[in-house]
Length: 471
Image (cartoon, rainbow, N blue to C red; front, side, top):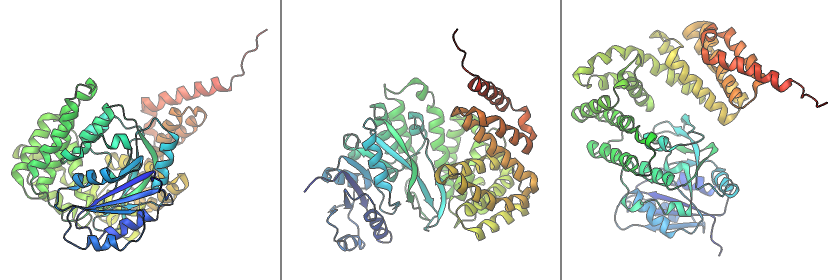
């Protein structure tokens, strides 16, 4: 029997509620040259019965005698694999039928690439409905990999040699940072396949057992890369910001679990390392809390915000003054997500509550909305984005009248103008900028906008000028 091209490795533990659906989404792949290796990490539920219910010869089933964690299970699966391309998928995620084909084809056409990654759909907590779309950076950098977690396990495919370079036997919480960072420093080239191809599931009520260990483990993983002699100085300079980002997240998580002491310690460290995180209205600290508070729509984000802000260190009590703003933004963002992902009743309810609180379409929300619409356009095309835009218009008018719609239209046009300018399509830039100015005259005072307008006009004239003839 020939070796399969792709090895799909799924570590699993007590996932009887989701595993069958995940396995079926693997078997439904239109690319069929794969093996599916399921490693049961000593489950105590019906996992083994579920797996044995499938008779597909591509499935290999490994049972661990002791529960040792997902990375040890991934290592066992890797050792049993034979594909030249390896991917580690989570036991509760779902996968687009073109997932394997897209990655395998890309790697076949780009022999210099060692790891491919895709975007993903974020599912609502404890649900199969879509909450959001995550499109990672098109060209990922070492700084991206160190600062946070732009890629999840189910987003990636590895050439075999790079999969074996990861130290799965000594993995810890946050090891994606050190593993992917090490691959990058070792010369592995990462490439985005351009599409969202998996559906990441989240679960309500999750509790972190040792909040200190979780935070410090991730900080140590960052430090492994930042202390590596191969790490460029420009990335090393991000050490404080990188650590502060994690302290900020784990400060929120501690407060969410009513662990006030560690939460205050983490937040103080975050502010000490990155003082500008509390500058401005809104400040980075508050927007970070806001995003975390609206992740799980089973929770009331207003109550969650109040509970978290009450636990801040006393010297940061003044941030509670921005609570009302954050509550309004929460309803706007949740309403936007619901409309984009075809939950109109939820969308209407959230936007109506935002209007009652006096929300406006401006600043932080407008920028976030534009980003979401552009991501949607990149994934599904401009016509699909226009349909979503039209669905949002009535809600925006109810919030801030026609002026709010004009602001959004102008912001989208400006973003498209910059995109066209950087792509070298100068001829279309002036029209888009002039239409944006008609929607929002403030762009007349924006130096960046005026700069690309002038440069595009000059560029278009040069392109249209006939070449001179030699006499």
